Image (cartoon, rainbow, N blue to C red; front, side):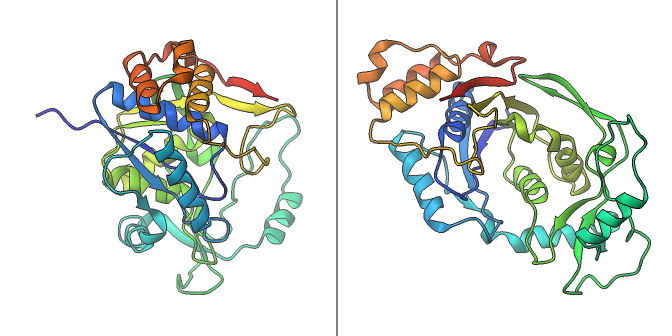
Length: 306
């Protein structure tokens, strides 16, 4: 039997969809559908301080209006915290430890141990708590994960062969904060494995986490996605990535054909003037039939949005 091909769109509902997140949704939908696969929707709302139910509802409404219909029920990470905790305490316990270091303590340590001049070394946690005994139930504890100190590569379908050693690029990452919030890097990896995701298409800004997430999947004995595609990004006039943090304008689905046409044009896909008067299903059917990676390959920027 041929294994199922499964892609996903996994927005964080910290605001409404903007054009950058829409291009990711359109690309991931058209790509996996061009392969005959399933497209799942996962609402990554573990950040309970910033995520809002009304934004999640808005995202679902916009996707539905644009004809980006997901297969199966949408998954909400906020309802799966017990699952992440189980993996953290059972599968990841041997390579995890509690940490009580404050930001002030870490800043003081860095001042006392400066990086030699001229070395472009990323700032990583200096493992001050690694060899201490801690009670993980302590209310001031955050939990860090020791990532393998191994140079590893994966093949990105758009960006080529990517090498990374997460121990030196990220260090011992916090996977659960003091307020009990599960961090993105852990929840995303576990859900990709549990949902059987085979094809991941997402923004280039997430690529530095990919090797770490592959390592987490292996540590959890979960399947690793077989295909990765990191899309070039949209930027604003100030040179910033188009994002909710940079106050990107929410999309307006009042004219769905115009919006889909814009997204596909930005993605370098085949478009025709007739699309502007077509239905979303007709536009997406054309885009699926003619989906092409070539215009996106080895690019870091899609466009600057004025």
